[in-house]
Image (cartoon, rainbow, N blue to C red; front, side, top):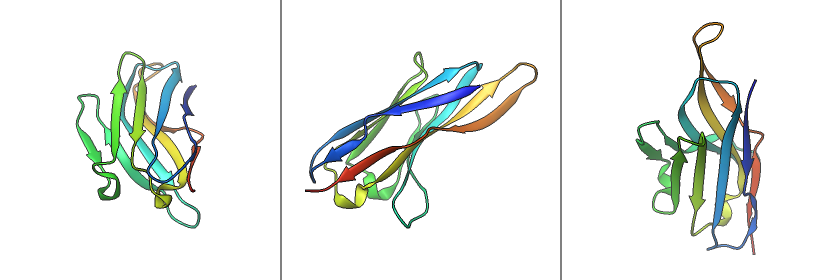
Length: 122
């Protein structure tokens, strides 16, 4: 069984910063793309940022220039540095990863973390 464990959420004032972390644990062969999504109250879940194994990155337009995604392949971990936070960034942030297993057969599937709440408020 593969799990993604997130940490780093909390309450921050507008203009502040937070760093989210997510690490994969369990039995697997490799991790492919890793992503951060978020879901605000009453809204659909949206992609915030994604990074491939090779380091190709994409961001939602709303966070470009403020958020930075990075990963540590040796630790099977992904991070999201969030700067200049705004009240509209308030949401539950979810880590997502593509997981590859080879036993008993090759499989490539998606795993989600439990979510971590980020609240931006004065």
